[in-house]
Image 1 (cartoon, rainbow, N blue to C red):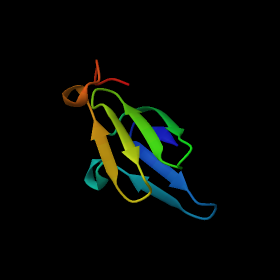
Image 2 (cartoon, helix red, strand yellow):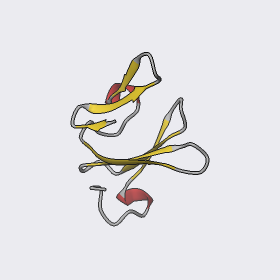
Image 3 (cartoon, helix red, strand yellow):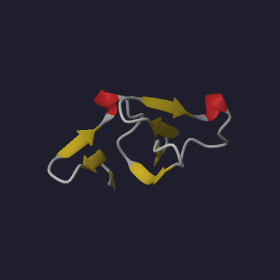
Image 4 (cartoon, one colour):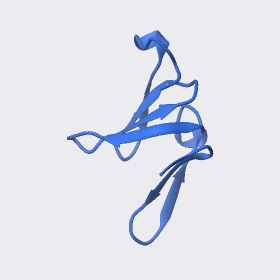
Length: 71
């Protein structure tokens, strides 16, 4: 679930919340999508896009070729 306070994952029993302390580049999440390899891609408001592989985030922003950090 994408929120203005980070990202929340529900496993059927419990919620796990992710914020910048967990590697999320920003807490204002605008969109999210899962790819064919089950990575979660998260678009942020001003902090680029992050790929979450289930254990860590990798951030891409204008330094990596994005035309804007709001995704």
